[in-house]
Length: 114
Length: 109
Image (cartoon, rainbow over all chains, first blue to last red; front, side, top):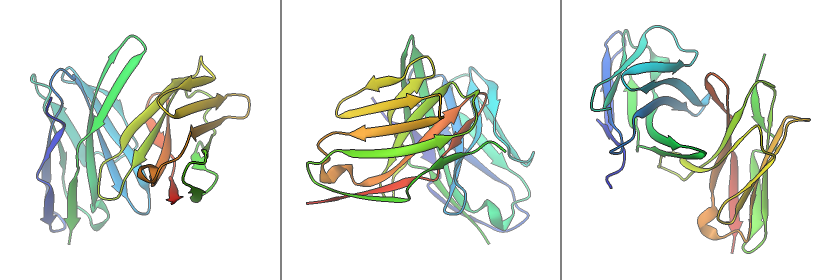
């Protein structure tokens, strides 16, 4: 079974630009979550999508948005980039049946804003 | 405000010993907890989870203990191996998910 894939793996943007990151979950997983990881703030939850609907949202400004497609692939978009948006953006797909829960993270997209 | 925090930033153990990593949380409404392992250059790896209606759950070589009275979560790793060296962090969830800063576990041969 293929793992979670994220594209691109590395990205350099300048302040004010916008960026779109992509995540393909494990086949059969309908839930996709996005996280931001920085050395200063650690791992922070951005949002979770399930069956094309945003199910939960973290405490990030409206510049951060996402969506999920019918094939469960998800994208997140950051508009008007700021230097502080430089981070590793991680996507995770998950599946739950009864009390059993499995979650797998992708390798992340390293975003550098200059 | 509510917070998730780890008691120790670093932990060094001898190979073969048991490791205990602790986590404190303050949101009494949190009902789901996860422990993750993150190796250098890799994404987090789900280790084990526990719901608030349980106080203990065991996996392969790992045990998670939940003490809701004092809002404390711990991860026990039995017979720690060099491959266990990584950063471990806890996460608590109610409507969203919040993560601890992490504890770096180093296993000495």
